[in-house]
Image (cartoon, rainbow, N blue to C red; front, side):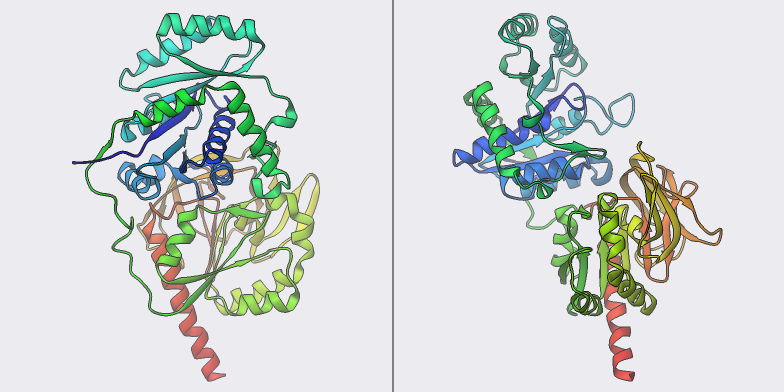
Length: 480
């Protein structure tokens, strides 16, 4: 057994929307402003909170999700991307004990036990006083192994409100109140929409937002006490030293292959590891815009690709622009007919559809998959997914078990009966009748988001598909 410092804290809450992201981002921005080294993590699969933590820290925030990744991979990821002597801020999700079942499996509390990390609870005290103490007492009694190091009150109505809650919690539980954040105006809150917060790259004033959050923490939280808590955390005891790579057995390709991926305001949901591991495996990555490209650039970029990766995001907010870029749709259809491997997740699936309807307006998109999609006001699939590969496809061997998550407001409303699906869902909604993984030629599209650290089969499939296509492409050029 080995021990390394990894000063760390988990920022948790009693529910979703308790203020965890505001505190995590504000604290990160403040520590960074003071010249301290900060690494950030997000418990769970959330892309958007992780993107804000990335913006606050200035380096990629990593997701730690025990359902998708498993606890050994989580530990390896934390050791790889955490800082041994700096500050490691881990934002929880939902309430501290909320998991996938009544036992709290895959909860933030389980992550706290794994990482041997103290927890600061962000408590929304809207319209409560002494009952806030009962909530904290409940957390202490639920699992005495979890070290609750302090509480930060949120949405406080004023000094009298703060004093009553502070006295009740500290007297009844012995847990210190580390600060109290007042109710914030909408201008000081992180902007949101139907899928949650708006991605920071879509906001021109994200720097000023982070500055405001930094000021809120500096003015309302005893940051010196928070720093003392983080510094006093015992060394993290783990079974092995930090590895240089989570994937030492990853097969490297010696062939030069190019994998493109859509990267813009429509398609921005990519775990950093998904792209990094492709590069580690030997792929050259090419970022492409689905909207802003000249016709000659579109054709040139697509023709030199050996595979294409289209992640999730918000295609629905840019449907007019995506539909107007028919040069890209035409060029992509042409490359798909030649056999270009395309892997598409959620928003990528929407882009490959024939028609997408949102707010009573129908838009024609790539037309590669013969399906029609409707975007609704409420989620059509939300949660973890487990699927078994039961059909031939370009990226996964039959029998492979895929664990991921889905969060989509859209669903397929029309499709031909003969459409080919290659995933049987044990858990989750999927795209058609508890199935997913729609296939056309070398295209694979689903609503499932996967994490490459937990799915080496996906990396192998991407690399092998790209290599095979490049060989066929070169042969075709030689014969032509």
